[in-house]
Image 1 (cartoon, rainbow, N blue to C red):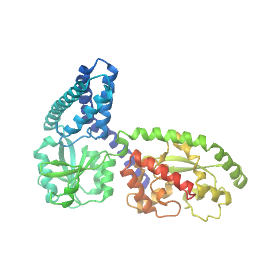
Image 2 (image 1 turned 120 degrees about the horizontal axis):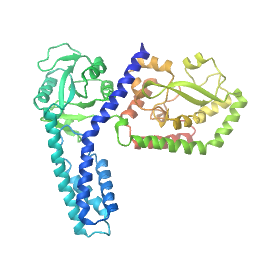
Image 3 (image 1 turned 60 degrees about the horizontal axis):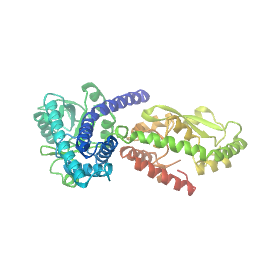
Image 4 (image 1 turned 90 degrees about the vertical axis):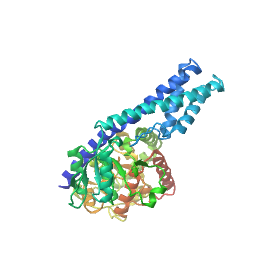
Length: 449
């Protein structure tokens, strides 16, 4: 039963992520198109060089992307990032036309870009508003059928231009609702999202963090709607408002961010470099393993990877061959009598993990991610540890946030799950690079990773 439930969730999460990726792309692509066209017109008078015009367009798109100008918003505004647009336009024209145009021409081009970009956004905002008023809004679940949740649902129903159309409440109680029905409890979120085509979840009550993670993994936009009287709202810089209600948007899933494809490029580059540089070490380790455990050098074992799917993990063998069932269900401990001196040395330095660089090249693993576990223990931990299965939202890795904090081997599984989910929730390329560097430092200190 546990396997079938996890498989169903895996399918739902993947389908949800695909739907959300397509939806989220509409508004940002419109803004990108507006900026590209505006920069082309604005710089046409600064010089006929098409290459310089292209450079200006690329630079302004990169700057605006870095400044999160293209993030979709509940209430889009043509003047929302006016100062940033003026600055990015000026820098882009300066970079592209340095030495080829006068300062006056550069300033005029930057000013024209800002004016055109604001005008283009006005047209786009008007089109979005009209589409929402005609019913092109996101079916939305409101979590919490209390007074605050009802006020918020009433407001969203009255003002469809915000793009969030309540279709029902999620609430553990069975009270009556005067505007939209109570569709079920928090545990029913997966079925309700699929049945009603829900695209957004607004949390207007107290829920566990694991619920928000699940809703986000299903492809929903997740918003926190704290009561306007909450003091903490005043200290949050990045927020939106629906009339008088503040909305805090949760970050999108890592796979839906623009920098996600770079992670795979980084994985391949690091894995190839690592295999080349460690080839002599691998050869030496292989000879040592052969002398201790025999000719079967590689240990292959099924582990659980991205979305709960199976992968075949490769390691250098560090203990005498065991019964397959025993290997799959027996928890490894530090002083296992089956591990010889060579095996202990390989484990202490993590050299037995080097063949997993091939797993990374194959794409079943990443350099950085939650460490993969055996199916037997995944089923066991998923039943007893809250949020354990949510760590499979990203590819498993050679090293991770938990490992660089000493959580490896016979340590707390609950702590590992918490560290892994912290990494998954806040994934960035910077965090991956940071973990790689700290892993190298751990290896130098011979403490493993």
